[in-house]
Image (cartoon, rainbow, N blue to C red; front, top):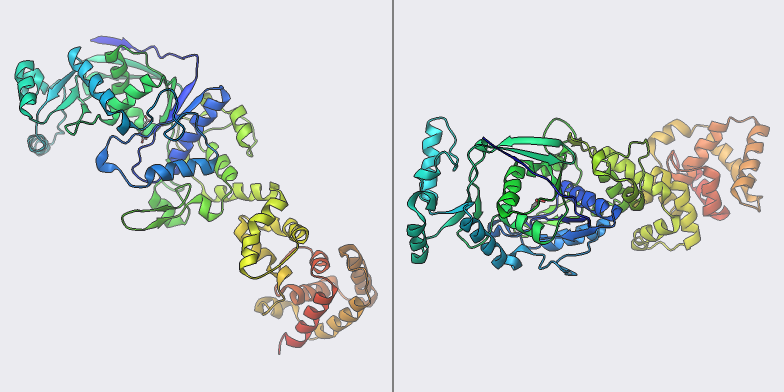
Length: 515
Ligand code: GLU
């Protein structure tokens, strides 16, 4: 048995890539992969590359490439080299690099690491069915390659003749029969695999395109990628990829396979279905299926701040080793390390996602929130001065998770109650209430300084003097002003809506409640 030990290099210049396939929208797991690559690159002053892996034409989805670029840009993840701005190692779309791969596949044939195979889909299918009938699984490997329709079996000369005649062919990797591969993963440590368990994967397809495996390795090499940071689902490909570096005589980059994002409940990978069931998005931005027109929710459209979304994702699978949870992108860059990425999967928690957004809401500049909230008011035909709106937002934002919640928490600043919450009326509006409210009207009519502090002092003094209970007066007063038993400090509300509006609302309540 041979033993092959790979020495993964750490190149001096850090170059990482995010290499999505444009087969649909980007799952948040993919966004996290992009993010960790980005943080790693930025932390080490390296380069971040976007490469589009579109060699599987059967899975190509229109609009997916644009979606990926737009979604990552919303997240604040930018690239140094990509299909947009180019770079010294382009083109950055694999379908634009086609001739490169053919040459490399040929190189592997020439040095004995690959061979031509002519087995038709029908032939392979029959072999699969046969194996299944015997309770086995068919794999194309060292165990049977000498008896199948390929250049290992029929010889190079007849193979070249077939190719000249136009017989369709693929190129397969010749996986050694019994070699122990020792590989290293930054997150998982040493990984040992014996090649006897591996099959002869197709590297080059009959449609003239490389498979993912070949294109990925060729490009990582040519683009001088120093670290491959990608999802755990690619870990099973690591032995083949390591062998390909060996076969080409290239030094392999360092590898880090990130843990899966798991369902909120139960086991398994977080899927779109989990999101649909529990009502949370699994995509960064809204996606419209180009075939069916079906729309899938996005974090952006649900009202998440990109910074909150990114902060939440960063902590799904990585921790700083401290209790700190709120990190700006800059702080993430400072603190990030692949060594602190967990091995085990990270359970996605939709409530925690909301918690993050709420934290960002609390910390957000109120002027910014006012600008975000304004369109809602404009649509309702409400005009308000900016400084007033800023004051209102400051009062209510602790009750809101999203900007869109601000209306529900603040509408009573903009319009008088049209109805009164029935439960609150029952509990708070008693026989004696109208008479007390009438006295309150008289009291407030004589107040000139309608600031929160003054009205609060005067009203409270009057309550004491009359020996009313605080709750008895204040709850009814709130019901009259707000229409319900909610909202921020009542004296702050009346200071903002003003004396005249407060009196009108009190009088309306006296006239309308329980009539
Ligand atoms: N194109 C692969 C994907 O869609 C990239 C895997 C890798 O990073 O090597 O995830």
